[in-house]
Length: 75
Image (cartoon, rainbow, N blue to C red; front, side, top):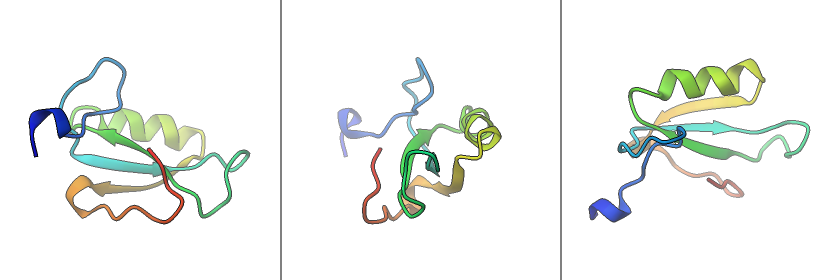
């Protein structure tokens, strides 16, 4: 994988390599089984998790190298 293909953190302004996948959905907009994803570096994992968690959107946090994208998910 080249550096241009390396997944990067979803935090605003961050270009660090992603280490975590934060799977989430907005129950007012998405079917319960649907998962959207944000990627996070080590530094931003907790901040992004809290942002989604406070809203009741966060469903799972998984290491990027262990993530299996469910059918119907998107980034």
